[in-house]
Length: 284
Image 1 (cartoon, rainbow, N blue to C red):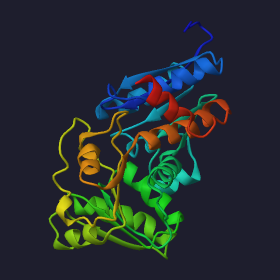
Image 2 (cartoon, rainbow, N blue to C red; image 1 turned 180 degrees about the vertical axis):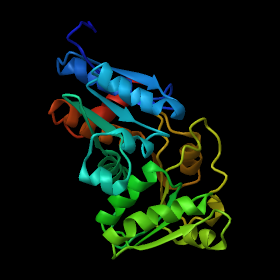
Image 3 (cartoon, one colour; image 1 turned 90 degrees about the vertical axis):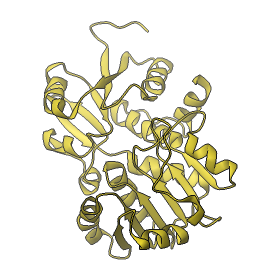
Image 4 (cartoon, rainbow, N blue to C red; image 1 turned 60 degrees about the vertical axis):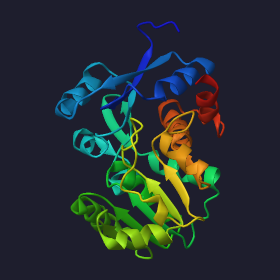
């Protein structure tokens, strides 16, 4: 890869970023499509986010992805926000349009494509439990509600955060039955025992730790389980689920699908479906 003064720079803002597979797939795509650009991970602490966004303008960075924990807080520093991202209340993709920073959310579309393709999820009339109440959860809520699920339970340690997501979004989707629960609530056990789909949207498991707030003995055997934490070889959580017989998937497909949508926003090129995931599987 030859970098010059004409090369465009793209990147990732997050904390942490060392685990990210985004540089691998985007740099591979830039090379294959003969685009003079490079993708770099930028480790940005929450206290430095506003300065990092100012740096995007000052350095004329062409675009960035945004990951944990900045997807919600970054909205305040952008010039324009796409309507879908505004509804979700979180941004994971930024385009620098001549100095104007425009925010988009490709997590929502990427998540739905992945869960349907990899798990065979049929959304209409289904009951879903989402673990966590951050930006990734918001994207999943919108995707699932648009797809016609019957009910969505948002479970979180901090009940107020789960309730806020519902307060922000329920008026857009009156046909969906929303509920917010704490992990310690007895109704949470009932919810996961009847759920058709359970999704971990938290960062728990990123370092291989167990998800202690999901008691597997209470999940019905026909439930589908999706972990947004990704790994080319499978997270420890997903490996344990598969060995126990559950149909499940990690977030590699979501990462790849949202990356394809992001690539289109940045370059105008629509990649073939599955292109990014193929890169991740082959190169890891």
